[in-house]
Structures are given as C-alpha cells and as structure tokens.
Image (tube, rainbow, N blue to C red; front, side, top):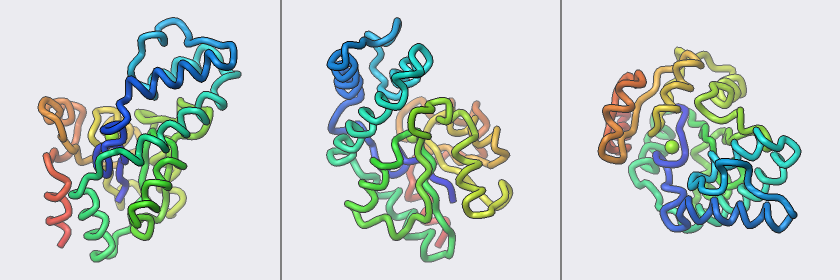
Length: 211
Ligand SMILES: [Mg+2]
C-alpha cells in the first residue's frame, strides 16, 4: 500500500496555512539577500514556490528545501489528522499489508508527524521529495518507484492512494493503479478524469474494505 501524506493521513496546512508558509519561505530568501524568482512573489503554494526557486536558482534549491522542511515540520504539529487514514494504517497492519508513505512533502516532517502520533510502527518506509530536487515530486513517478524498489515490489502488487490528479498521473507513469481520495467538492471528477481506478470520499471506506 502506497499512501500519499497530505490529505490521506493529515491536512498538513490546516493550522499553518500554505500561503503563510510560502510567505515565510520568501522571508528566508530575503534574509539571505536573495528574493523569490519572477512569479514567486505571489505564489501561495510553498511546494510550487520551491519548484520555482529551484528552476530559477539551482544554487538555492537545497537551502530553500531545508527551510521549507523546517516550516512543514512546524505545520504538521498543528495539522489536522485524518482519522480514516489512521484506520487504514491499522487495517493494513491487521491484514498483513505493508504501507509506505509517498509524498511531495519533506520526509523529515512526515516522519516527525508519524512518530508524534505513534503511527510510525505502521509504516515501513517514508519517501518524501528528494531534498534540493523538486523534480522528484509527483507527477514524477520517481518516489513511487523508489518506494517499490525498497520493498522489491512490482507495480501489480501495489496500490497507491492520493488526493490530487498529480498522484494519479504519477501512479500511471509508475504503472500502479491509483485510488483517488476526493476530500473536497469537485475533486471527484478531476481524479476520475486523471484515470483513478476508484474514487472514494472517505479513507475509512478503504479501511473497512480491507477487514
Ligand atoms: Mg495529497
């Protein structure tokens, strides 16, 4: 079981909103005598901002990624847990399925969250974006492939669950079927159009199906 993090397990920016995180990332650049690249001044998605910075200034990619990792670690502490997602982790453990988390968020922030909520025992691997290399982020299949390789698994043995069209696209590119988690109105159609094999509106639905 390959599981996206933001959405299926935790709403990362529920308490520390993404636009504020992006603003703080810009402050960090200013503090180093740098500034956001064109288009980055008004970007409200911190992951998109990281991508812009890395594209425009590869020399700033690692330091910006590290700064964002710190901000994401702060964000998950005040994020909103998804109880259905946590049920799914327990259902996978009970039914003998191994779970890896595959996410565009920072692996260090995800691990800190899992440990804090005592969920790390249910997860065999955390595959966050490669630090300083935002091209590793979904829709690239890279992180999914890394997660499969680590367990010596084949695409046909895996299922991926994500809440964004880019998750479905990454799954497709990796040869893995993806279940769409439509946690907001309007997402269902986007996930289905992207090619999700199934779309659910509750993680609990998947957890219940495993038992
Ligand atoms: Mg997500």
